[in-house]
Length: 607
Figure (cartoon, rainbow, N blue to C red):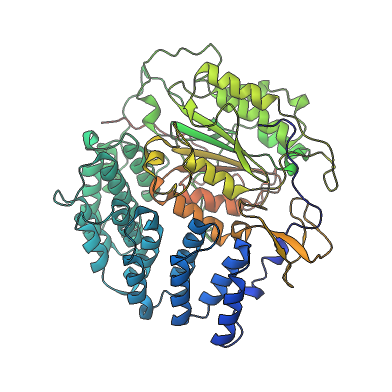
């Protein structure tokens, strides 16, 4: 990481977010022929943002001819082809979701046989299961001829339908001895998606079909010799959410108790020790941790007195991210017993380092020297890294205009004393750059590229960085992260797809980081679609990345962070959220969470 951070913002050229949120330019207003002309002209433009807007506007005509054109575009995408295809698949499923389009959607996905198109299969199957019986999904699940990711996509699509009868049939078909794969990777993927599908029938808990399907999932998830080690934790997280549990359990007896509506019994922890990863009071439940940290210029804004006091608290976390538009208080999210598997092994770390509870050292931080958000980030990241157990792996991603790992963590690396000391040393040596226009406190890495940072976190493994299609790369499934901590102080203002082009009349330009408008110019830099409010494309792509990977995503917001957005991101990862704004009335702010929120999680024993 270059200590003199890059400062890439060009005055007056970056597209202001206010120009993207009106929606006026994506609502079709003319006849189909007029809309077709607009579409054909706009998809030739370089910016992915303008092309995405063209896809959306044309799809909103709801005309079958528009669907045909978008299918052809999927076959021959432009620059950034993977993301064009992901975007088109989601846009078409949302706009052409009527019964009249089912046959066309099915025919479309059937052309593609390779795993990278699993996102297309999931979206077309969503439309299919909405209007027809689950016959197609069941056919996919009842044969081994289809790619394993397509079979998992069929389960996820059935789960999105929410029909307990269809979901139970799908789980039965997928997990039957005749259809279940023998390969550990494939079997784990299918078991985890079966648990995810069961979660879709949450409103039918207690139904006989729900109970039978739940028993099948539990039986499959406890055949440890046939599964990857990650699967019991992934299923435990899903069950904690499904049954509104404050604790994550990874054993069959606890799961069966939850299924029957009883409180699971915790096994004794006497004589056992273990640690969980923790960052600014938020606990994680995995062992392969990526810290995704905002290093945008706004992180140099001084902390308010209220923010400083909030940071000094040990918590509580607000718990699992909430469903969109939900008014219920979040339930505190807990750690799993995955950390206790190696509890009795001798720890070779120095006293006072790895394996400690970082919160114990909060009071000892040099608070007289912590004046801005970035200084707080450095100190809390140091605590988090020092608190990792030696059996964990970790990486640190910093993001501004771009997302980059620390030089000392180019991949997931073991949390040894040597590796942690090197990462901490690199973090503590980072210094801000000079002041600049609209940057009175100095400069760091520029704007706020949340999408690029999360995508990099999904691409990191213990051996390499996955170049593309991270959602279906088995390297990531086996050796990638299982937990993300995301810290940000603002809304996304950039992504990996900036392009210079002629300014459209409805586009206002300016500095998105400082939230200041600039003079309109003939040429502007368009960011990609993942900064488009109300975050439809950002959230949809996080869903794509995590649908099979099932990482826990925990979010911490500070300053002007959009806590509603962070809640929605955390919801996609069944993670926790904490707000460091000092404003107790802010949406998603720290909340006791009903029944004694702020509880720490239990450690259900493994059976």
